[in-house]
Image (tube, rainbow, N blue to C red; front, side, top):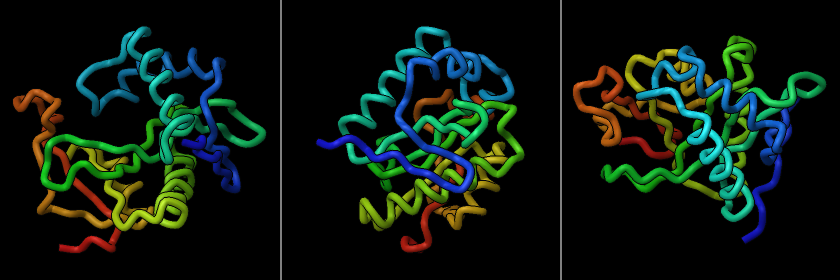
Length: 183
């Protein structure tokens, strides 16, 4: 299968991963604030393995999680993109839009700008009917991005994340989706 194309916005390039992305990727996955809504920080080895998987998806699938750089600025601020998720829930497998940006990239509208481009790619180029996004109930920043890119909250699809300890405050997840899939 052909490689996933790179995307550009006014300020961002959503591109394939480079070797020089790995060190800042490792650092951001060891930042407690960046990883606040994940069960744990990623070890260096786990972060390297994840980056390799993400790049492989971009090379072999029709969607993926692009490395993000700021035009004329930082060469790597995190990832934004589309991935297939199968959590054993009634609405999965599905395509999820997601992002993870380093702390210095927060508050500049990058997540919203990049996610809008990824969403457009999924709807227009991949002809997807529905794109989902989910996050911990406590993650208000991601929920705000989901709303800004036009996703609607789907309370009937809230769930306890099957890969997170049910006793964890991170287990309870909210689901958002493109408006085409209304209950």
